[in-house]
Every structure is written in C-alpha cells, then in structure tokens.
Amino acid sequence: MLTDTLGNLPDFLQEFHRVTALAMKVYRKWEGPVWDSERPSMVVLKTPQAIVEKIAYVMANPTAVGAVRYAEQWPGLVTRGKDLGKAVWTAKRPEVFFDPSNDRWPEQATLCLQMPANLENFFSDPVALIKEESQRLQQQARQELEAKGRHFLGAERVLKISPYQRATSWEEIRSLNPTFAVGRGQSEARKLAIKALKAFRRAYRAALDLWRGGERTAAFPPGTWWMATFHGAAIADWG
Image 1 (cartoon, rainbow, N blue to C red):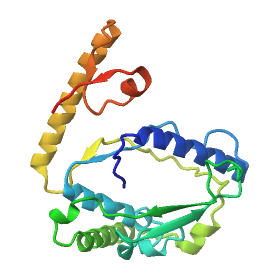
Image 2: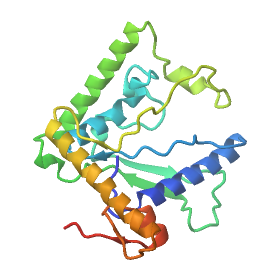
Image 3: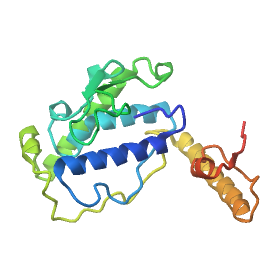
Image 4: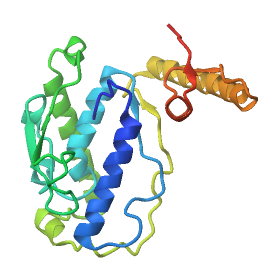
C-alpha cells in the first residue's frame, strides 16, 4: 500500500524487481527468470472504503492463502494492527549481490509505516475499522478452508519448504488484473471510476493516433507515463 506522490511507481517497480531477482539468483544459485511474464498489479484505490479494505487485505493475506491460521503467526514480514501508522522497520543490506563499497546501497535502510493521508476525515477510527476488516477476512478464510476439508500449513512447515521445489499442479493465475477498486457498497463511485477510465483510454487512443501520424504536439491525458517518460510527449491539462 503506497501513495505515489512523485509519479515514479513504474521506475520503482522496475528497479525493485530487477535487484530482487538478481540478488535471489545469486543467493539461491538459480538460473533463468525469477518473475513470471505478467505485468505487475497496480490497483488505484478510488475511495476511503477501498483503502481500508485493501490495507486489511494485505494484513490478512497469510491466512487468506492458507499459510497460517492467524496472520500474526506468519514468520516473515507482517503488519499487525498495532503497527498501523506507527511501525518503523529497519533492514540491513543483504550480504549477497549488493556491493558494500557502492554508495547506492547503504548499510541499512529504514521504512516508516504511515497511515494514508486524511483517512481520519472519513472514519472516526480508521485503525479500528482496518483491524475489524482484517479479522473478518481471516475468519472468512478459515471457514472456507474448513468447508473444503483443508488445513493451514503452519509456520513451522512454511519454514521447512524448499525454495528449489516447484508445484506440480496447474493453477490459473491472474485471470483478472483490475486497474482500480472502490470497496463494498460504493456503486456510484464504481460508475464514476469506470466513466473516468473509459475517458482516459479514449483520450489516450486519440493522442496516440495523432502521434503515430507525425503530430508531435499531441497531448496525452494526465496519468500517461510511458509516452511522457520515454518520448517526451506533452500531457494535457484537465484542470
């Protein structure tokens, strides 16, 4: 969950995925690609309700995927209710891949977990609401798993899984890759978001057609990244 105040999320993701893959290949002695070929999922949260639900979704994920019965039991990095807006995480530079003599890679880095700006303007106690939603998602996951006769893997078994093993069964992944979310009960916001997305795509297509026809003054709609970054295309002012 992040706020892209500088509009450089694509650059960040490219570098993050690149160095993570290279470091893991060195550490695990892997060959070939680390990531699949699907584009990253970047979902714009259009409403305060969507923000609450997605923060809770991230918190509940270890349980939702059947790894541990309670999300707090996850042996890796996990966000607890008490961490919201308060946690400060410090990580040391990995001993593999990252050159300690390169100033680009500091000895340690710190991440401060902050609450989304102005969320308290919409909810009297957004932290309590997020905690409640996370618990609801975890309870729902436990009920669904029990209904299927399945069990949680558990933290100990998670830690014993070999990173060199691969699943032998086939699972369809990411049949849908949404571009925005509005949250439950936000039908009007959903209509407006769809309308805005369609307007953006129409404007983008029109500008791209002009560009391909040699019109280099064609202005692309706000939110355009690739054409502006790599081709210096103009961005229209929509007020």
